[in-house]
Length: 399
Ligand code: KG4
Ligand code: ZN
Image (cartoon, rainbow, N blue to C red):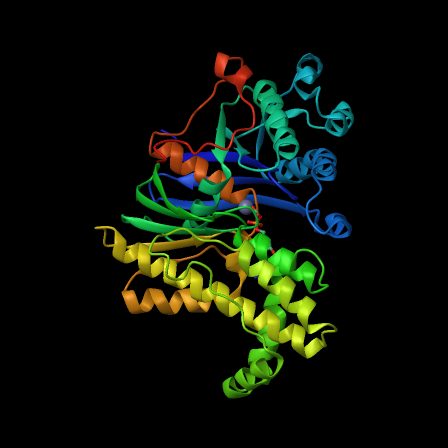
C-alpha cells in the first residue's frame, strides 16, 4: 500500500506565481518539499504603488509553465503523454492568452508521478486566480489527476505545519496579510470560526498605504519595518520618546478598548496622513520616528486583540498560529512571542520562505483537507469540474 501522498500545487491569487510538489508520509506524518518555485512580480507592480490585476494576470500566464517545468524535472515522471490529447483540452485555457501561447510549445511529454493537483481557488484577485484555476483544470484532464481547490487563507494557516509535527486543538489563528486581518478560532482541522476581523484596511495594506504617504515604495511593510528597527537600534527608549514629543509624533491605537475582536487600520493610516500634512516638510529622522510609532501602534493593537480573544472564549488555546506576509516582521513576531510565553501558548509561525504567498502552503492545506476527509476532491470531467471557478469561501464550517 502506498503510504505517501504527492501533491502538485499552484498559487496565483495575488502577485506571486508559485508551483510546488510536496509529499506527505502518512506513517511518519511528515512533509517533504520535493520541488518549490516562486516568481515574484513585486518589481513590476512598484510603479503602480500596489498590485495591478491585469499585469498580475498576464505575468501569471507568462510564468506558470516555466515554473511547472522546473518542478517536473525534480520529480519522477511516468507514462508518455499523447500529444493529440493536449490539443483537445486547449479550450480550457481559452481565457488565458499568454498561457495558451506558452502551452502551444508544451515540452512535457510524460505524466508526472503525483496523486493530486491543488490550486488556490480564492480569496484573491479574480483575474489572477483564473489563471491558476484554468491551468490546474487543464493539467487535471491532461494527466487524469484529481483536483483539490484550496482556500488561500487556509493555506496561510497550514504554512506553519512544516516542521511543527501534529497539532493539538483548540487553536487560535491570527492572519495578517496584504488583503486580510482575521482572528480565527480553530477547534479542529476544517472547523474554522472567524471571531474577529478588520472593519476596513488589512494590516499589510495599512503598512503599504502608510509607506506611500511617507514616500516609500511598494511593498511598504519591509521598508517601514527597517526604519522602525533603525530607530530601536540607534536611540535609547527615553531618547525616542523625547524626540517623538519634540515633533509631536503620536498615533492612535484603533479599537484598543473596543471589547471585541474586531480591528480597524484605516484611521491609523489617515492619522499618519494628517500628521505628515501638519508637519510640512519631514526629515529622514522624522519619517523613521513615524514608522516606529506606527509599528508600536500595530503591535499594541494586535497583542490586545489576542489577549481579548484568549479571555473571551471558554477555550484554553494550545497554539497560536500567526500567518500571512506581515509575520515576516521581526518586531511583531517578538511581541507576539512574548505574549505567548506569558500565556503559556505555543507560538507557531511559518518559516521565513513560507510567510509570504507561496505554493507549498497550498499543498499543505490540501494534504490537511485530504487526510482529515473534508477536502473537495474533484475528478476531471465531473460536473463539479466544469463548474469550478475562483471563489473565496473557506472549505467547510466557517461561521
Ligand atoms: O501574505 P502576503 O504575501 O500577500 C497577501 O496575501 O496579501 O502579504 C503581503 C503583505 C504586504 O502588505 C507587505 O507589505 C506585508 O505583507 N509585509 C510586511 C513585511 N513583509 C511583508 N509587513 C510588515 N513587515 C514586514 N517585514
Ligand atoms: Zn496571502
